[in-house]
Length: 485
Ligand code: NAD
Image (cartoon, rainbow, N blue to C red):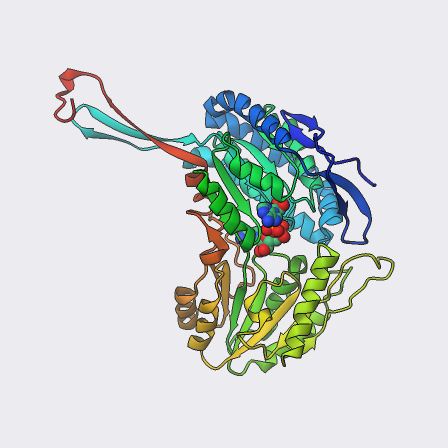
């Protein structure tokens, strides 16, 4: 093993799990065994919750301007350690080095936002009747949990860590068992930034740990990011136990391309959106609805896709099972009559034969009822569905059960507006392939891409990580109090 056995991180230090159940951590780049990760026990979680509960009074009562000082320092440490962190992400997740760097850069942006929270959480005060004043303040929820997926080992954890902690909560986070190494490194940086012990804790594990988190009476709120199937289960489980829950799920994002779209930019954007991070992004374009005569753009998309090379500017997919699943989708579409214009099946990289690569794949003449049109593939595959009109394209987009992102490619402002108003997605774009709203705007989809209220980042996350306290005060009878004695 290249790295020592993964440890939990409890009360500011590495804490070996009491469980002997382990899973291998394998690099998707070339199949190198990196480490083993423990599937922690309920006793490990109890220990983490106890540490968080012990840290909570001191941390939650510290003024927010004091708490955010940790995140000013954390941001600098992310910058200082960018190369090392990016290499680790690349190794355990399989994405390209450039994509890993972008993930740390985004983590820095998320941290900057958290450092600005004192400016955003000022309460309100009003004299509500003579001599009587009402004021509001955002109070931390308490001990909270964050459960994260494999596809962004640093960025998705940083969707929750800086905001939740800056707002005064203590956290238990469970990384994906497939990529536990980066988060362990982030824990050390948080400690180096001066975060008090117990405020941030990592408990490794799989489904059993997620169940234990949803059942734990010491945890007040659960945030989840992952597939829709699991997001639903976690949302139901956590709310059944009367916890606050926000669960983000999977996606099937549509790009609607009109004949007046700028050909080269559109082709480059579609290709980058479907193949970036090997298609393993919840914001990836997965279906393109081609309206009318856009063959000239589809030709250019194929040209662009052929420039995307596994092992060079295209990373690996997370596992052998993922590679097989993606290739199965392509084969099934072909068998059902779709046309494979660029075929990424059977990709392999010389010298990295144990790596799990799928080449960029463009499938045309996909029918809306085929699995490649309906389901999340989570690989570098774009399914092109033909439509005669914008309304037909919107009907296809609206019919999919997800609702993370949708984009339109056109030069007509009127049509762009028509589509963005009617697309059933939380994040929409005009001539943008990956319409992720940057800070301070918040991230969150609709429909089966998100369960619970509010978004997970930006200003909208303040509602999830805090409770609103309303205080009504009166002092002096001389003020002529005329209501509520
Ligand atoms: P996943 O749902 O398999 O796993 C997510 C987390 O849930 C992991 O920590 C995992 O250990 C745990 N888990 C897995 N199966 C479970 C079960 N049956 N019960 C309880 N917990 C379980 O997701 P993944 O494969 O790690 O990540 C890819 C998915 O995440 C894709 O569907 C992608 O679209 C989605 N995603 C969504 C967003 C978003 O913002 N909506 C962002 C990133 C990823």
